[in-house]
Image 1 (cartoon, rainbow, N blue to C red):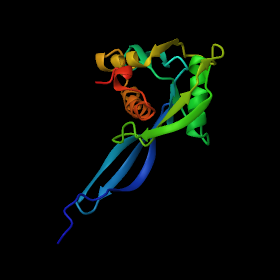
Image 2: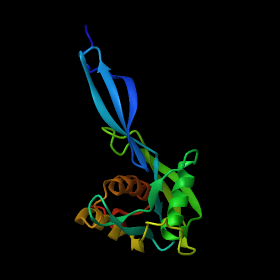
Image 3: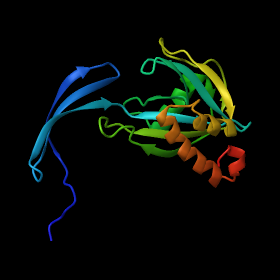
Image 4: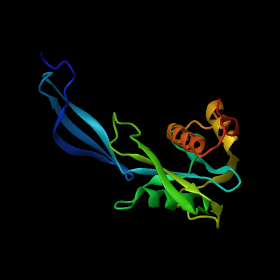
Length: 195
């Protein structure tokens, strides 16, 4: 009986289409022999990302608010950024947490990973739990980074995700992992505003 599942494509060639500083756009030629199909496709060559979910002893989480050029507006987010080449994702998450917020934590744990947009990106996004977070100073943001930093109660965090205050898709993915971790750690759904 013939296999009716779709077959994988094979990459035949890759060339640089554009170097955009923080990512590259590659033009690639792909073929699918079984389906007699081929075409040129564009993908983003982007470094992995780390998102820090920094919990304080006060049952709050650290959020940053920053201006985003893609939406031309402000966005409430978890501290996050690109993992440096050769850097461990947990270390990258801790570094980004400090740079963007001035917070450091006592313990860390990798909660999960997703592919942000497998249609056009090859990178992974790692979700790093940081517990016992405390602000040590103003952090070390880059020259074009300006942040409002706020500790938000956990039940407010999940309310903000539901009511549209937090619209960043990767933050929503992170909250999925965080919610499961908190429930497994003994939090009651009502303490998290989880319905």
